[in-house]
Image (cartoon, rainbow, N blue to C red):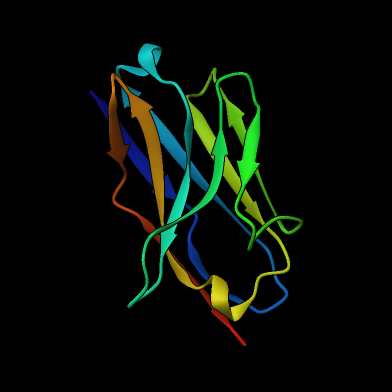
Length: 115
């Protein structure tokens, strides 16, 4: 089992930047892909970015060119660097990890972008 704790969310003006982090604890030796999903009120949860243990990554269409994801395996941490933020990026951002055949989720960190 793994525990995921997000941090770094907050409020920012449109065009600004923010970096959020997710630290994993527990059975970290079994971690495989990790990533970020987001969910805005009234909308479905969508994939933002995924990163493999080797650093390979995939970004959602709506954030490509503005967001980047990175991973520090020594710290069991992933990061999401968000640049050129838009009002439509406002959402709860959830850390995700795939472990032992199941999805694991953090509690989420709120990102609010004011226009």
